[in-house]
Image (cartoon, rainbow, N blue to C red):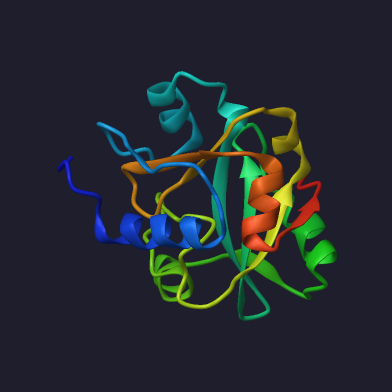
Length: 158
């Protein structure tokens, strides 16, 4: 991985600063497309990884920031979001909604705001790690900061 931040990570870093977040983007030596891969490289509990999952909720993007220890109950999320149909988004849908690739979707830095739900379970961790816009990048944050910087709604996801 190059020393220089990937362009998507630069956008995320700028969005973090604009929202008053303190965490610095960390470039990992290997891609971290899963919570387990990120946790292994960071030496933290998999539950402290905030997976950024984009869903297609009645045609609109819905970002669910879930603990790496959880699976999202799609029916529960649909009820919570007030959507008739929620399904996993295609890579093309994710890229169009976020400007970022699957495996690196950050909670911020998207071309337009994305409705966000934040897994309450993340509040159990003092430090939460979220993707930085690229599969090699992450940043440290907290549950409260994630809710604040995304305008997200705290929810149970399973």
